[in-house]
Length: 148
Figure 1: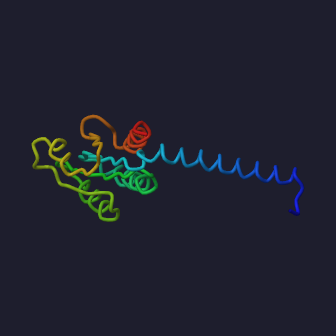
Figure 2: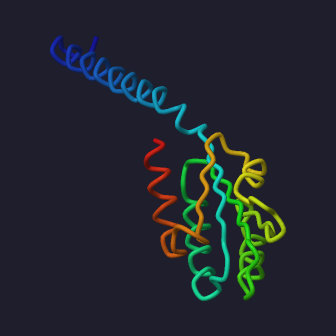
Figure 3: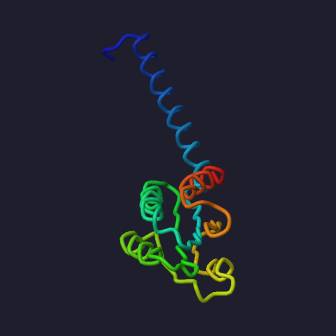
């Protein structure tokens, strides 16, 4: 009653625009919802890498804590003759997403440890034969980015 016709039209237009923006945001949230429920299990095979493993595992743990994707990481020592298992076990005790397993007695640790992973997608990162330890964090980041 107190506003003129043009002011009422302007306010109604703003309300319609606000509802349109809300609808677009809800649509985007709904379309992105399945990506949030994705979980990834990572098996990291380690052996004789005490010089570089601690820093890389801390970086990996910080990345896992700050990502929106649920990631659980199983660290497996494949018969190291240095301090790698002690370092990996100590880091795993500090972070809930990391688990340490001594896999020195296993014939094929990758296939046996996949059963321990809780993720819908399981990735095996082999630093014994394939990757260098310094490539772990970029590999996990690239894998998570590729998944969604």
